[in-house]
Image 1 (spheres, rainbow, N blue to C red):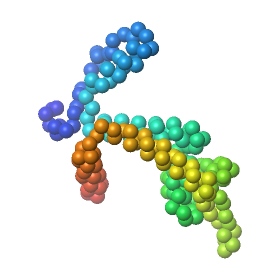
Image 2: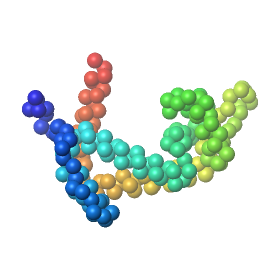
Image 3: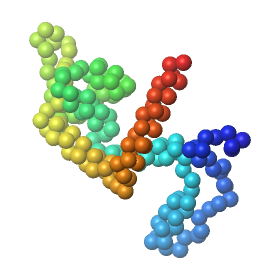
Image 4: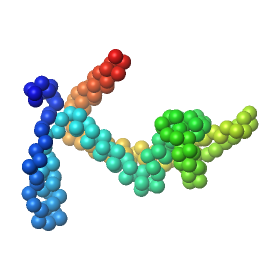
Length: 181
């Protein structure tokens, strides 16, 4: 049955009986854990999931240092386009509940990252826009996260990266085709 998998998909059945050796100190703990993990086979899909997970964890860490949540960041990125948007629009864009987004927006307004405006034509509507402070925070986040992502590509040649990106594009095209059928 394992022979039916494509060559690029590395599949290793679970080996419940394999454990890292006992640990003797904190310094050796990290080394042994690293050695144990580096010997495992990683398939393409597992590798992509781990890569995305690492980026998510780092992004969350950087956001926490600045005092923002992932939802705050999504709202800021949407408003970065420069257009004024309503809370309802933002809630749809982030697939969140209007109440949850409204609470986050209030917090972002209190912190001076976004501003509210009521148009004269319809006073029931509240439009939101990113402030200068919000733009500066977004630039800082973009730079810090970008540096981390760049570090993940250290040691990878331009040709290897182009090949990797071409494979990912083909896989995304395949996803689109499969979802259309």
